[in-house]
Amino acid sequence: MIDYELGKRRYVISGVAIGIIAIYIIRLFTLQILSDDYKKNADSNAFLKRVEFPSRGAIYDRNGKLMVYNQAAYDIMVVMNETHNLDTLDFCRSIGISKDYFIKRMSDIKDRSKNPGYSRFTQQTFMTQLDEEEFAMFHEKMYRFPGFYIQKRFIRQYNYNAAAHVLGDVAEVSPADIEEDEYYQPGDLIGKLGVERSYEKVLRGEKGMKILLRDAHGRVQGNYQNGKFDQRPIPGKNLTLSIDVELQELGERLMKHKIGSIVCIEPSTGEVLAMVSSPTYDPRMMVGRKRGKTTRELQRDPFKPLLNRSIMGQYPPGSTFKTSQGLTFLSEGIIDSHTAYSCHRGFNFRGLHVGCHGHGSPLAIIPAISTSCNGFFCWGLYHMLGAKSKYGTVQKAMNTWRDYMVSMGFGYKLGIDLPGEKRGLIPNAEFYDKAYKGSWNGLTIISISIGQGEVNLTPLQIANLGATIANRGYYYVPHVVRKVQDEPLDTTYTRKHVTKATKEAYELIVAGMRSSVERGTCRRANRSDYAACGKTGTAQNRGRDHSVFMGFAPKDNPKIAVAVYVENGGWGADYGVPLGSLMMEKYINGKLSAASEAQAQVFENRKISYGSTSR
Image: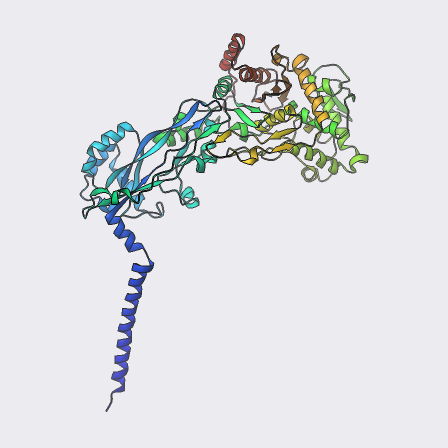
């Protein structure tokens, strides 16, 4: 009799066996044909792939002076699979670390949450940026420490203690950097601030690869096939900045012991000639393994030296803003060159008083700019926002005003080639409708006409205003990089931006600024060798007022536009005008006269007391 149950079992057992064999065959096919995991492991045993780091692009000032260059540094790399019979204590003594640090570092390397690219067969970064002396000491003993290798790379060095906020610095990549760009591996360096950050992909170059052949014991035998498959690193491209390092150094001298900024722009190109943010720091402090400690100390400083106030500081522009108001009122036909307003120690209307200093009255636009009359510009804004026959509503008038301000580069980021730029604030009708529930008029917001109230600008925007007036109605986006090696400059920085104001309006404002230097509030900038134009600003503050200056020189074919902002500096003429004048003289003449150098030393040593601050 046939045993059907036994036959069924035989089929089941055969099916299971065939299934297991099929699974093994599929798995072997996947591992050996479809997957390269085994190949990688085999290659890792036979080959040592050593990354060759490129030299980072050098950075020069506009006159060809080398500002940032490279110096060799060395990383200690480890292949975990080769660290047999390691004398841990001897290793730690050789590089000056504790055993606890060694254990933690090795653990972190193996932790895939901290080091996603970990493989025990490939080189991992153990310690970075050894200097020449540390490298020499370790290299002598390296034969004692199997699995550890030296990897050469480059770190930044600085020729000048200047322009730290513009240059920025480099540091080890963060997990976010690695996730964002597969080019980077743990231990790699990346630009963190300044042009090092914004031009990172240009400066970094491309890594190379050297393939070395190893024997069964992991010992390097030489280049694989005489280097046939090696890839040479491609050096990063050099940058030429628009910064004049000597002008930058003067600006930083003048701003010692002060909080604020100086920004200088070449009007004809938008190139930033100097960008001073004070307090500052020595960029040489941010090199190597000491960078972390230095950064923490700077972050704890209550005066915030890491903050680039030139593009991040948002301040009331004070009376420098009156130039933009005059341009708007003239272009809109609210006033003309002969329109005169009275000013009896300020603007007085319907119980509202906005104070002003003593000067002649009534005034037209040129003497109003020259004397920095508050009353004139308050009346101008009041009449513009109240011109219902022209605009219909105060909201439409307000947004027309806003459009002029935006066309002059206010209210939005200008787009400078540095990270972290702030936009400032230019209010519009919706802003005030929300703030006052739709019930407001020109008197409600009269303070914006003199650069107070809700208006905030960055020092860069104030300097760009000076450049725009110097050009009589247009500007180029300010930029700190003048040239990238073998590449054209981005068209963002070569495209002309024309404002809404008329050329005739600009000529009147220029005349007012020239008059201010000859006989008005900017007399300390008056010179016999070139014609400067300027406008003071005294921005109200809860404590002592901020001292502000905006100007350019020469009047015709201008070479430099300047903005100076000194927190708690008092009147615009106290600090803003003399510092701005010194910067213009230095750039135009190439040096300071003996008298001007003596004046510069006075301001360099003059301190403004800020007490403890959270700025």
